[in-house]
Length: 241
Image (cartoon, rainbow, N blue to C red):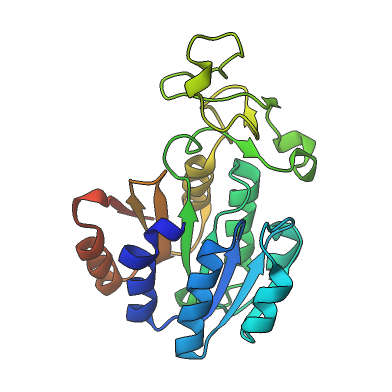
């Protein structure tokens, strides 16, 4: 997500006057610090949700008074976070997690015009159409795909076996990847599309292609659509529900 900060996310924040932010999935804290520096300049606040962040959370909390870290799963926390301007969803990259994150955000909106700007990472390969689980036990059994800690490659639906001639080039061998790509309720982009197909809120969705893909979801707003189109030029595709 941090690779999109300078060119995409920060300009949108400034344009829309974003001051209250929820980050799901902080990992090493690179993007977290970018968000905190932005908030410091604009008297904003940041809540970061991650069950196992890999940076010194206590040190960052001491340095930034506008920061709250919550060590938990997003679906256990988001329901109580209402009235925020923007959400950055970059946690567990699977259908169940992303779909239910969006449903909770929708549920928390009393006026659909107040639907926040939502940024979603990994809407392109490899996890657009394939579930990945950092914490498989956190996913209800009825939504969890068969998965293994084996790598993936473009053009291969099946996981790459250790004896495969291309195994050394395979991606993300240390996480649980769904055994097969595609099909119902499989992958981040599938979750977004399923959410948009049933939401009552008129939304626009922009896809930015590099760096595994960034999705930008927001209440339909022609002015903001045009602003984002100019930011991302020919890398953006729009549609509305």
